[in-house]
Amino acid sequence: MVLLFRLLVKGLTLRFRARLEPLGTSVLTFRVWPNDLDVNVHMNNGRFLSVMDLGRFDLTFRTGLGRAMVRNRWKPLVGAVSMRYRRSLDPFESYELHTRLLGWDAKWFYLEQRFVKAGGDLAAEGVVRALFRGKDGNVPAPDVIRQMGYEGPAPELPPAIRDWTMP
Image (cartoon, rainbow, N blue to C red; front, side, top):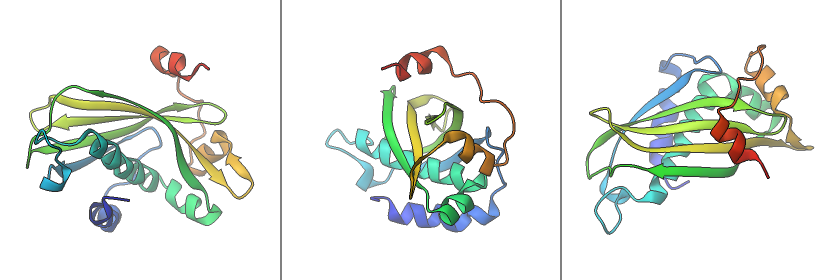
């Protein structure tokens, strides 16, 4: 992972952050550092994807899924990402990453991740399709959800996500 230092900082502060419900939203605050920049002197489009890993890490561990993931040796794997870039993030600019679980089907989880500038403007948004793989193959999403303590039905996926998931 390119952002090892940021991962360590966020990992060390996890115990001081409130537990999240499975359908809650993780909010992390970051700043654009010089090593995040591209030749246009704004945050590199690939860096957005790397920072999104940190949001999923935070959501996973704050919902209680992290312990089950470690105990069962499940590996999270991203199957697809769809991004929309709206506004630049400039050097030293502060922003928040909002990560939430939109829903799931038998195999996949669908997450929304939004980059929000300090003034509230949306800089970028992405939708991620991910799964967990164990020693015997892919772990069914309902099994993972149970480990999070969620007993309710899967939320209805937005039409755009349902259309995106079609083969």
